[in-house]
Length: 410
Ligand SMILES: C[S@@+](CC[C@H](N)C(=O)[O-])C[C@H]1O[C@@H](n2cnc3c(N)ncnc32)[C@H](O)[C@@H]1O
Image (cartoon, rainbow, N blue to C red; front, side, top):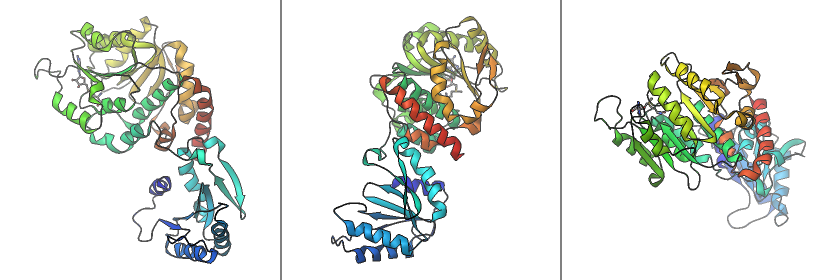
């Protein structure tokens, strides 16, 4: 039901005087008489918005055959509303012209879209969802909601497209069974830190490295209070947040002490943007990152901060532990060369543009280049299931299906 309401928002069906979703079915007094339920269906059809949905409860149950009888009678007499989705104990009807549109917005939320069956009912096509396939709040629902709804309220620089890539990369790491810590160098008001907090897995720590107020208010500095306020307000588990007040240029060893060596599975490097600082941050990130992990560099290929790109490329031309994985607007992602195919297998189904576009040649590697219009949709992110290492193969197949569906829907 919630999914259908969300779909209506996406489809622009809001703020109408007529109800957008109306229930029909067995009466509160338990009446299961076919005529009574049919009357309910008629009343629902009379008042619902023409583009809305009627939900008939109690259908296709051997305990209540009269409800199904009424549903079928109603569908025959009123072709303005056809069944399009059969969930356990509920049949949904809408105008024939909207059936596919609703399905396109609802199906990606279901945990295993690959096993949902398409069937014929009264000459129209319906999707049948089995009980085990009902949607649940997946492990990425909180992170996806943050990106979609509240991230904009936190001042900072992470954009939704890259935020979604952080999430996808986390998913790929889960598929690899990789655990470690998460980290950011240069946190400012916590916009990206909060997202990383939502990706923490059991026993992982989030390390926030920033100069903060180490030298008072002499630049670079970052006020601690608004950062902490935002983190608390947006649900960061404070007991798992380790703040390191370090100038990464002047005290790289101290930064490494806070981050640990080879432990961090994902680090977002977004501190100072001057050549020397970037080079120092590259060294720190390469030491701190797990051999299978990912380093995300901000402001790559940006003319606003032209010192970043040559500094990063110079570092990794010499340090071949990490190579370019993906270039996205304003960011470049690096991982170990042997991990590239693993990560790309997870990412590319969601990035049709990056698949079709010519790759970028960077440090002797052909690197897919994502663009803004490549973003995976929030619906897909919400639908991502939890997974652990051994489930990766199944999940990969599911991803392919979701990816295929995403490109068909586009
Ligand atoms: C661009 S902001 C970070 C934005 C943030 N990651 C976001 O997505 O909203 C840069 C941050 O880097 C910090 N910074 C700059 N130079 C630094 C240095 N040498 N050591 C540690 N932090 C530094 C600044 O204090 C500031 O908070």
